[in-house]
Length: 375
Image 1: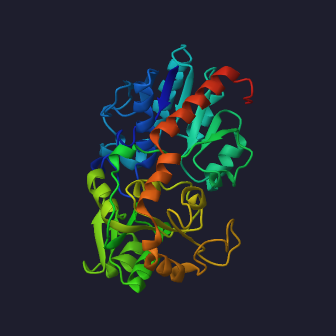
Image 2: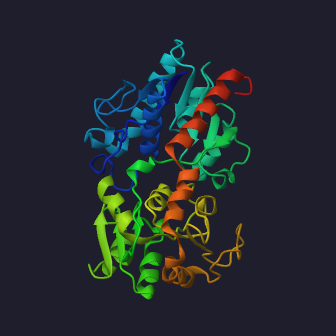
């Protein structure tokens, strides 16, 4: 197949710590980079639309010489304009017959172009369907196809033209299994309030287990300054900042558990499958995609954060809620077989399974010739 991957020129692919601005994770860019390289290895004719400093085996087309996040003349303030320019270039070439299908990292941006192209677009939804995004997509819901990254992500807009739910996948070889006794717990990702950092600090403190925070906060963020930083004492709570992948993997391997007490309906959570691949169980609140990713009592523990009626509520191994449930989970984490965590990822969350699914989606859309799309 002739596949156009419409990525972003905001963060260089593949993302590394020095290319990811504060407040961003780089996860969507990482996934699109992984998909791109896997498709090239499978013999597809792949064209990647990204920044000029991107590293790829695909044919690279850019409208900027480097990632706009690292260009002081563009930066965060103007990067969206350059993403529209990148999308324009992609659809311009599509109209000349260069591609069979466009796979977009964007949701609303490519949706606005897609209806003017005879080449179909499939968009992977990397963000929650809320606010302005929800409003816009509800008005252009049939201009492109959509892949959800979890079934829970679909709930706010159940009538979008979904063609599949495809979970993120990782390269198992890059996340070696580590067994044996472990000493601390970790929380990895963006250091923002909806990750439940203060909840993790309280739970790990009550359990008497050191906590490592892996990720960079936004500069002068009041939540971090007032509610997190005062607890970082290098004895109980350690802050490692945004670490390179090699260091992150080592921290996964050495951790007793990954804490994931999220305060929102997170669509996926790549850190959960990365940790489990290393054998590290996940202790997470029952929100968003968590029940789709974590197997309660087998690869970790799912905790109800409160009395809110959610799917699965009350059926988990640990009946306590909130912080007390997290504390019990930390204390009982030795019941989880670390090898079972890795086997769960091997069965459901590998690059191979993810790319297999995308190939099937591309073929299905191409075969339909876009007949089901409406403007």
